[in-house]
Image (cartoon, rainbow, N blue to C red):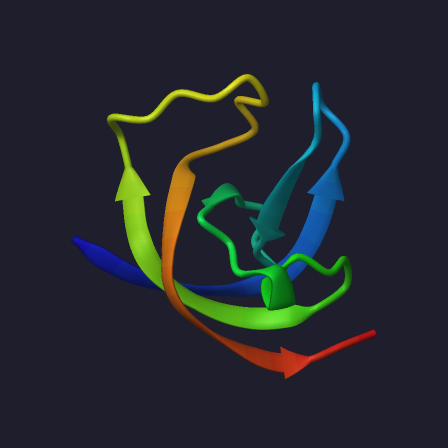
Length: 76
């Protein structure tokens, strides 16, 4: 099932490091297959993707969101 979430991109330094989307409500999604344009801390974005319940990661910071499309809303 596809979802669309809006938030800010953050680099999390757990293990080898990972990219995450943090919503205004405080929910954290670990990004899977994030485009290089999306891997910039501070970007405010809208991401459409699929929450992958069949994927485990070392970071374990929240649900894994496989990115299908995104829109940059603003950058800091």
